Length: 141
Image (tube, rainbow, N blue to C red):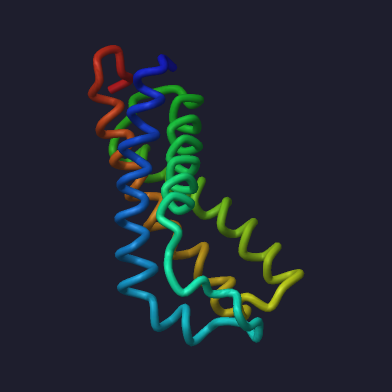
């Protein structure tokens, strides 16, 4: 994949993932996350470190962009959503269950639900990445 497409997918995807993540996790499901915290105390920062959130979302978008580039065929919205959903689910299933295994940050309910919500979060990010990068000159669309 050419650099311009990789950077575009990463930047556009990172912005979309940040906004969609804010809407899902901070607005729509904030009370669920608060109610299903583990017994650990003092782990909530009390405020977001914006730069760290942006770096994480850019890395997430870069991974989705890379996964899309490795497969054959056109970058359709549906394929972008599928790839993004799978990548997001696998990332957060990994992180959540490892954290559950060695910490008290979340209870088992939250550990199970979080990766399921990533199906929507990553799917939307992947769909937008596929739509934008797939339409670029030389894109697979």
